[in-house]
Image 1 (spheres, rainbow, N blue to C red):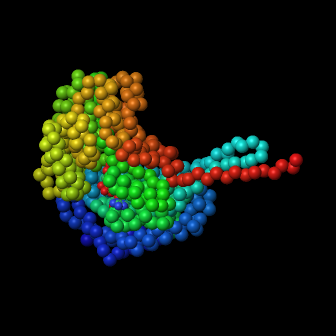
Image 2: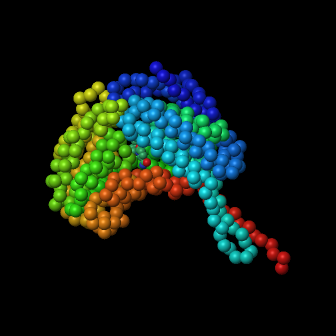
Image 3: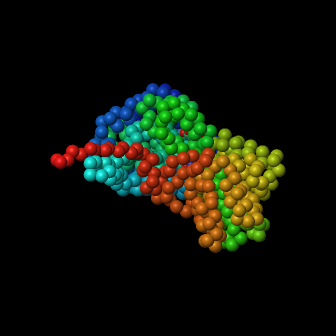
Length: 476
Ligand code: NAD
């Protein structure tokens, strides 16, 4: 059975303990990974600190970082096929989605390569007696904690801008899906970044993750994951007032108006809630439909859910297993609670007859206040609800503690734009769920977190402003 290692100070490093990696499609162990210890974490932090202090990332012309980043992108593309297969096995996701993750990872490196030499400050006019300017300096050591749902692309999403801005990075992989990230780092190693610029620890969140968050050398925390873990990290980060970026969960709503194009909506529902088995922070987990089209849309969405081919990722099934037994049990328990609260399960609502951790595509008719319409499920489960008018649609959409993304579907662009501007969310899609890309800023409000990833804006999450003011002496 293949065994994988941690990456610390430019070396691949074993550990006395190991974690098993399970294929969720078959429920069988197929690899092991060295479980990082506190000593490994300290060594990674020391390596990152030495790299920062050496100036090797920042004393160079910024174009040097562009060169490293482009080499990394090229190396990622070279291993993409091998990486996608491993990611598909450890995570359950289908092969096409796994390939997209590696492609996105390469794109993040290409995109931020282009920004490494354009992080420019401003000059501030203060009259003839002063010269004043700002510059953006890196945070220093950036600790990045990654979830399991898109481990490769989310890892690259934070790592690429952090490196482009001149930070050293210590990454903590998720317990259940570390291998794709290990291949990603193996590729990035070939780019020639200075030793200690990139470190990867495959340990437990409660042990290694928590240690990194509280570490005296941590200058920044970038966390992507669940709300309870994010809250815990923020409490720990408060001890040293460590700046943080929080990319948390969501309960995002799509609003379908009376003039919705149903075919267009169904294409978005398919990716919005069933892509990656619904384990997407920005999933379309609520669908609000104008009363006049409600039955028609409801029947179409149920038919879509029932038409999906449920199977294993390696065979590119449309609906793949969820990542673990725990995740499957948690989803089924939430569906059970929905039943008890009086919600109606229109289709699905149970495990599929497979060895692995499958949940059938599920559509639930519920009231806005019910827990299934308020809490993140993180599985292939969508809640559908009718609304009477624009104000009620906005009130229901905004009526959760989250605010990650939202969507509006309808032919009347005036109405869609009007409503989009009233939705409490970091990103609003009109007529296509997931419209946008790595170029568009992404992040939440409320319990969905704060700070932005993706796009040009994200680079500013990885720098801090320094202002220098100079008093001039004049001859007379
Ligand atoms: P999680 O919170 O359980 O774990 C995330 C990471 O935190 C893991 O690497 C884990 O080991 C680590 N961790 C756990 N306890 C820790 C601690 N005390 N200190 C430091 N690190 C700790 O989340 P998950 O189950 O892996 O991912 C699913 C969640 O992530 C969902 O809520 C989803 O919405 C969210 N998510 C958000 C985004 C986004 O960009 N907003 C993207 C993907 C996933």
